[in-house]
Length: 311
Image (cartoon, rainbow, N blue to C red; front, side):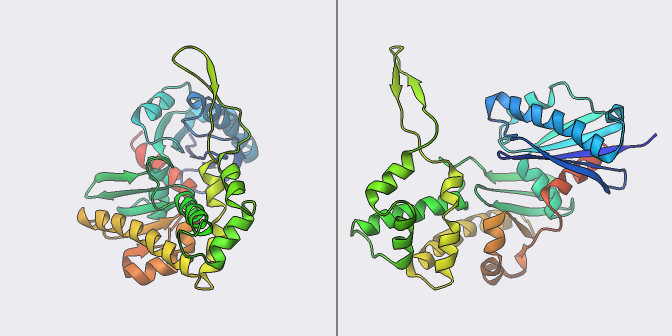
């Protein structure tokens, strides 16, 4: 009887589904809709995986009935909460077995090839995780409003804030701060409009049952879009870019100390911002940092086999 493994890298923008054979060789891979567990109670994520499963079996030329011989692992954005993962795993799935993880778990498994050590995600968001001596440690990943210190979203927000303060004459301006103001409309008034304008008309019910208009800010990814400007000026040794780089590296220092405190011997760097900063990180931390061995989606396949090896 054939045995298959299905891995899911469920992101807030899209959901990637990969089918592999017993030797972890990829048979097919497809991409579907958004799949953050915190969106609409996980319903869009469930739909994306169900449809993605049908598509990936079709793409592989394998009968869908073989899902009964398939073990699945989902690494999901918005999966930081235990309750959200448990509820999602309890849904009706066609597989022989299912495990649901936070997306950092599959990043860890992919980056380290299923071995022990640490991983940081430094992208639009940020988080850290390690496995040392069989024990799992996790920090960060609490989202844009209260966490994600190492992220491109937070760095972009700090850049926008610094640019506004420089335009007010409170801080020393630079070509970078001037470029940010120009990119966001040309004035602090325009930047303020940009910061709060969204396509959503969000209304909140007050305690009295009436509805009041509410301002909501830009999504984290919108601040992350300032990163190309940041790196363009960093390469020119812009003083503000260098200052913000020091702040970013300081946040990463905190996580390096955390890893070393519980005995992690390596920290793999995952995520677009982290990859871009890797030369700086290597210079600062030496052999303690490493590039990932595999992508997170392959990490999901690795975990699927590890979890169900005895089945």
